[in-house]
Image (tube, rainbow, N blue to C red; front, side, top):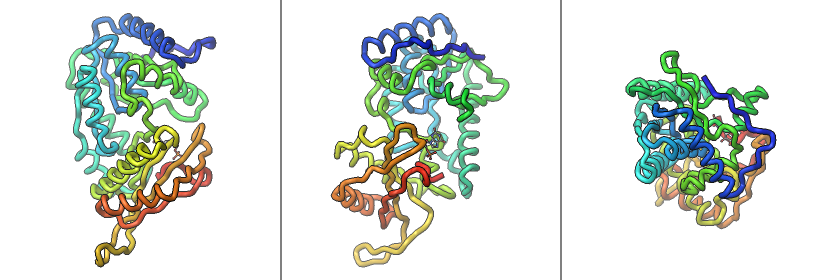
Length: 328
Ligand code: XMP
């Protein structure tokens, strides 16, 4: 069941704190009217849309909102901790944290087909979320961070409108979608006014299957850790060098092959780490951000010395097309 509210044709683009606050007040009233004294369940990934949706719901109904954060082991370094800190400690959310790392990684062990990996991650996510939902009493609503481009894209047949949909038959809730009529840039302005940190509001796009698609082939815990650690170094260096917020998306990939190297006079046989940094408007066509040579040298030095299992750093100079952004 959904309350199908569409973006009014004459709606002014939310670009200022005043417009954001007016939107927040309007939504609080409408959430209160829809939900009354009932409970709402929300899958909180830590992404921009679900975070802003959660912050709005907390403001409107406080602990009638139950957030579930599933750690599938494929999140970036520090992300689960940040979700807990911001939502539980700062915003006082009623937050259930589910450590499902072993469960996901065990299911993914030995699976090298990209589509099968995505299928397992998506399916397992719904299962974990459904298990948590069944443990709770009196939930009547499901909060979703659906945004306006999701609706437009699903109407145009570009992508199915997924989000927390696909729940089993016994778990059918009425939807609450407080950011449904907003464009992404408006979601960010609203999030900022709700007091969310910049690291959440201006977060880069991050695929649902997370680091899983940046650990091509069958995921192993050690190679996944190499992706996570090298990604953290890349983000830290981009922030230090003024590239954060300037480059559209950047990340590392650790492919499943090894090459010979040398450290302290001894032979090594380890993985390469590939750096990808891209700019785009619509992600249909993508150009490569060319990094300063000194920064590349510094990244090579840090990644090869600080990340276990890496003895070589490569840079991906391929635009889209012919390559896609992600490797799987
Ligand atoms: P591709 O690899 O298709 O990526 O050129 C385009 C953009 O989409 C992101 N991406 C995903 N986002 N779920 C998501 O929510 C996914 O499965 C997924 N796959 C790719 C990718 O990070 C890039 O920004």
